[in-house]
Amino acid sequence: MSEERPTLRTTARSLPIALLRARETVMGPIREMLAKSGISEQKWRVLRVLDEVGPVEQTAIADAACLLLPSLTRILSAMEKDGYLVRRTDDTDRRKSIVELTEAGRALIARHAEESNAIMTRLERRFGEGKVTKLLDLLDELRASGSER
Amino acid sequence: MSEERPTLRTTARSLPIALLRARETVMGPIREMLAKSGISEQKWRVLRVLDEVGPVEQTAIADAACLLLPSLTRILSAMEKDGYLVRRTDDTDRRKSIVELTEAGRALIARHAEESNAIMTRLERRFGEGKVTKLLDLLDELRASGSER
DNA sequence: ACCAATTTGTTAACAAAGCAATCAAATAGG
DNA sequence: CCTATTTGATTGCTTTGTTAACAAATTGGT
Image 1 (cartoon, rainbow over the protein chains, first blue to last red):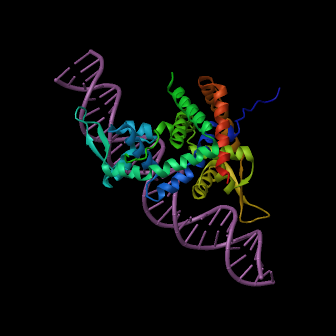
Image 2: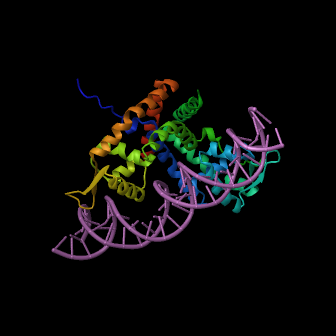
Image 3: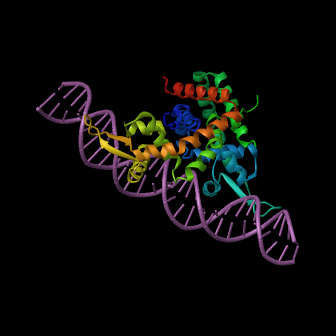
C-alpha cells in the first residue's frame, strides 16, 4: 500500500501555462510594432475592441479586452488625454460612461492594420493556415464552455 | 478604384487576444484556489517549473515560467524568505545561482495538486478530453514554429 | 597570459497591472 | 416611499513589468 501523493501534469501539458507560452511566442513581433507608437499591448486591445463594437460602457470593454475595471479606468484616462477616445455618461443610466473612438483613434488603428495583418499572415505561412483556424476554433469553444453551467 | 483601407480581423479571430481570453476562462478557478494560500499566479508557475525540472539556474526558470529576470529575482527573494526554496551559487560557474525547492515548497505543491487536478478534470469533462489534447498539441507546435528561422 | 566581448544575475527607478475597499447611481422589496 | 441590495466606476496599496545600468564570472581570440 504505497502512500499516493497526487502529481501535477507537466507544465507543457498545463493549459494555462501552455496558453501563456504560446502567447509569448506570438506576441513578440506585435510588441515590436506597437513599441514604435508607444502603445502598450493593453491599449492596443482596447482600441481594437472599440473599433469592433463601437460605443460601449467600460464593463463591456474590460470583459472583451481581459482587463480589470480599475486598470481600464486608468488606461482610458490616459487614452482620453491623448485624444484617442472620449467618454460621456449614458443618458438613461448615469452610472455608466460610454466610451467611443475619436478620428485620431481610428487613424491609429489604420496606421498599424497593414503591418499587423502582415505579421499574422507570416505566422500562418510558417505554422499552417489550417492549424491557425483549427486553433482559433478550439479557443472559442473553450471559452464558450467556461461560461456554461 | 476604391481607396483600400486595410481592415483588422475581429478580436475573436486574433490569435493573441483569443489565447488571452481562453486563458482567462481557465484561470478563474485556479486563481481562487491560489488566493487561499496567498500565492500569486507567477509564484505558482515558478513552483511548478522547479518541481518539474529540479535544481536549475534562474534564466531557465524565467524562460519556462514566462517571467523577466528582474521580476523573477524579486519573486525568488520573497519565496526564499518564506522558506519555499533555496539559492546556491553553481560550483563550476559561479555566475549562476542554482535554485532548488525545499521540503516546504514541495509540500505547498502537494497541498494543491489534488484540487488543481480536479479543476483540470472538470474542464476536460465539459470541454472534451480529446479537444484538450488537440489544443495542447497545437499550442506546442505553435511555440515550436516560433523558434524557427 | 591577456584583454575585449559575452553571459548571469542583481539593483534601481518608474510605469502599469492586480486586488480590496469605497463611492455614487439605480433598482428591488416591503 | 424608503432602505437594502445591486451595479458601474474610481481611488489606495502591493506586486509585476520594463528599461537601463551595474558587478562579477566566463569565454574566445590573439
